Length: 107
Image 1 (spheres, helix red, strand yellow):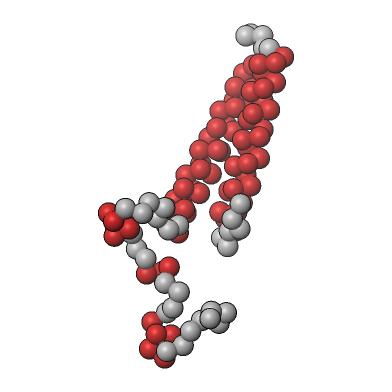
Image 2 (image 1 turned 45 degrees about the vertical axis):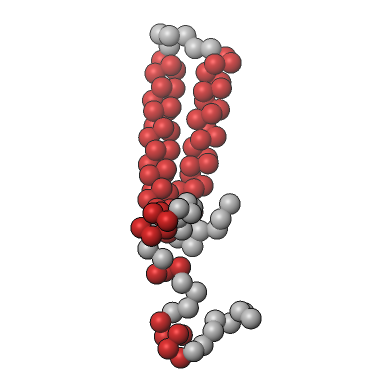
């Protein structure tokens, strides 16, 4: 997994993983042990499942929005490459070009 420089995104990724695991455990327990339709616990389980799904959706939206803003396009067709903004992916800044400097660590 890629390390995130934005702590908010990193937090959402951790929450997403944790909530998915908890939802899986709840649903697995529900099907392996069974539920009685009229029990109070059934209502609590349904509320817990709904709340976890809501949290998962929220984290997925935040992460998707961040990825959309920061990731390079993965497609290599001309249309996809020409429509994306590549200015922040350039290795050299405008000032380095003017001064003729190269970034450290490059040959």
